Length: 542
Image 1 (spheres, one colour):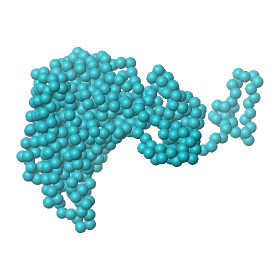
Image 2: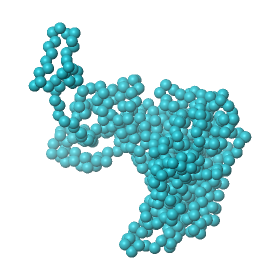
Image 3: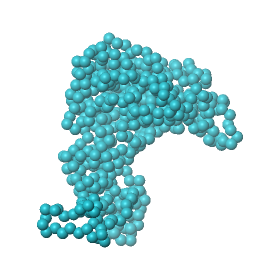
Image 4: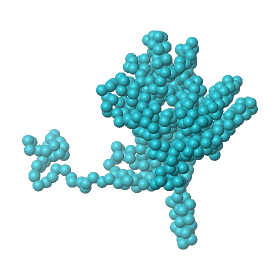
């Protein structure tokens, strides 16, 4: 059949059928013509029903519109129970996207909540909003009234300092920044107030209440809930419970009031039609009644954390935390097993990556294998490997920066991030703006008072004392985080975060990342489009 096309051959009867008739007439197309491609947006389907409809593309010839018409909540639940839970087709949950609001949680909790690589959300900004009326989270101190009193006094003091310094810094910036003739007074004051908040947010403690919104798929939500339920902090475990309840309970309907009024008008005209309208328009919707119902504490995470913390204590017991010489350390290449073993321990202490790696290397190959075994010993059938096993990236930065600036760097989801815990061990950031405004001594006094209180709270003889004390740490204090990425992401962060509109803290970190890459790979430096962070910033440019 030299003249047959591929399409024609694919539709021919089997040659083994003796009754088959083959026709290659030119005026009879071998394939059925179909309409041109169709693209449409979908609105109004509940997240799990939408996921079911999309998943049916791989199991049914129905179109999306046909699938949505024939699906009920009961069918969706049955399908998901079978394919998601029994057969382990977890990609189905990627198709159900859920919007959630989380309000009045601490900044500490917000950082942990957002620590998901497949996370999309926005948190209340410490730059554009005044946090003096936000309130704060108070952990459970049990019967330790002395600790509770010290904590409340410390947090109240920090909020008072935040309010006073915000007012002072705003007036200072106004005094040194003339208003352009073409700028409205309201815009001028709002812009400089935002600059002032950039500085005074450093005084806010991790206990400060904030709010955030997230839009995540159901698989990420399930992982998030499981992680939170496994957390060391009671607030985070409670948050995991609340997220699970929000996904499986009736959701907030933004149109409920207007739809209720419509139903009443219909009922006034026809009671039977009104009842039908109420059932259809005001029915309760649960955004993920099936996909997160089995999200429970992750024993792999809990038991591995316990083992690795103990291993880190034993390995580094004779070591003190070495002072850091740089805010950014671009790590050199090493054998993969050394990287994995070092990274597994990194999250569970406050040492630099290099300091841990040196101890790991000295301990020998057998010890490294033991550490890697600890990282997988408790892994269950459906558990993903711990994040520390995401190794082998060319660009790995050990970054030591203030918590306030870290919150901005934390948004870069395309890289692998491993955070160390919150601590006062690394000191706090001193800003030139504070010195220029003449409040250096006041700022230092506030930081020192908070540090003393936090360290005293951590020493209390009570369960959870160390975790409770962390809420009193101001955002000025530094923490370590390991960022692993490819070249494109290193360029992206360096370019984006050095722009003049950014905060001085992460601008310096992003520029230090660029400088580190430039020293190691000078031929690649010309491909970075970074801003010079030493050039004075126009305070009125946002």
